[in-house]
Each structure stands twice: as structure tokens, then as C-alpha cells.
Image 1 (cartoon, rainbow, N blue to C red):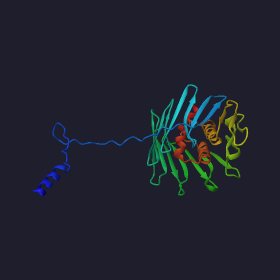
Image 2: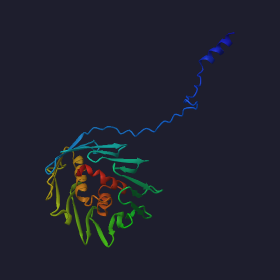
Image 3: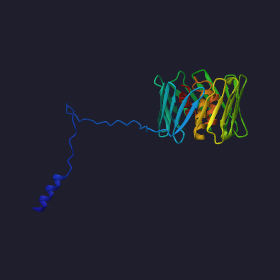
Image 4: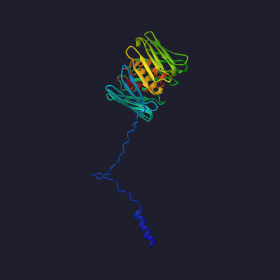
Length: 301
């Protein structure tokens, strides 16, 4: 009798399989779990760069010099990241950057959405969604060789030693690209374009001269080394940037110069000269270059 009592106790304690939930018509209820949205961690700025002079702004950055917040007179930008990658710009004209398996897959501008397509080797070969679709062609060394815009525009890119861009050819215009003995990009030279760049210690860009810049633009870092201040001298810009860390100062001034001056044709999604500078100075790729076109809003608006 004891063994029979034990069997009854075990049967009562065993978990019972619950009956499936049903909807009013008697069919089982299917439960679908939606994928969760990516979690974007809230970060706090620990470093600051202040801009005075022609414009007033305060930049808040992380320890690794990623910009989190830009406060200007009349506008504020909040910058967010996902897994270290630029994810959102929240401000006067918000932008969202979307990724698939670590690659930039789309840029959502609200009024339009750029879609990025890659080939089987992970190379960007198409960006559509803007007024004109961009197409990218590569050589056997995976170097970007041709950028086609719509059905008419075409930029050919030639390379020299060390895989550095040596020429940009658009239509009948060839712009030659020159470097100094340290491998830094120094000059863009074409019949209608003369664009000369100068550098300081730490290979920091400090001067731009050529037709585009009127009397030229110069940056003075100081007062000592490492620098804590950068003063701009330009006929329409006397901005002064100050920071407690030189790496933080460099980050903001570099991006400011690129977005406001090197990027001469901001309405174009791709421009050969700004692309050549971007890949040489910032060491980025073509997808990052296009993303930078919209990231520049935090410096321009």
C-alpha cells in the first residue's frame, strides 16, 4: 500500500501541460513576440569645448571625444550612439542612422530616406532615395574608382603610390591631388580650382587657401603646447574654441573646418574634393563620408 500511495503523490505533483489559449471561434491563439528595438544608452558628457567670437556654442563630449550635445543660441542638438556607432541627431532637422550587421543601411531624414546597398564583398555600390541615385564602382584592389550620379554625372578617381588618390576626373576637368613628404594632402590643382592646405604639429589642419576661401583661412593653436585654444582667422569667421584637453579641442576644430570649409558643396551628396580629403584626413570610407554629410548639420545649423 505504501508504494501505491507514493505513486499517487508523484502523479499529483507532476507539472501538467496547460491547454492552449483559444479565441472565440475555438482556434488556438498564436502568440507573436516582436523583436525589441535597439537600446540606445543614455550617456553623459564629461568634456566641454566652448566656441566664442563669430558664433557662440557649447559642445559636450565623452571621454573618447564623441560629441553628445551641442548648445547654440536658438538651437540644441543631441547626438546618440548605438554600439559606438552614430545613431541619432535630434535637433532642428533630426536624422536617424540605421545599421544591419554593422553596416550603414539607411539614413532617415524624415522627408526622405536614403537606402544603402552593398555587394557580396561588403562594398557600398548604391545609395538611393535622394534626388539622384549614386552608384559606386571598384577595381580589383577594392579601391573606389568611379562614382556615377543619376544618368549624367560621373567622377573618376585615380590612385598613385600608397593607394593615395592622385586625380579626380569629372567630364573634361581633371583635378590633380598632391601630397607632402609626410604623406599629407597638400594641394588640389585644376584649371579652375586651386586649393592648398597647411598643417601644424600633430598633423592638424591649420590653413586653407584658394579661390574658394577669399583671403584664406588660418587656425592658430596655443597659447602653449599642448594647446587649449584655437583661433580662426577668416574674413567672415573669427571663432575661438577652448577646451581643457587637446584631443577634445582637435576633434571639434577638425570637424568644424571640414563641415564649414573643406566641404565646399554641401548640397551635393558626393563631391570628389571633399571625399579625397575625408578619406585621407579622417581615414573613413565612402559610407562614412556620406553619413558625415548629414552629421555636419550640428556645425551648420
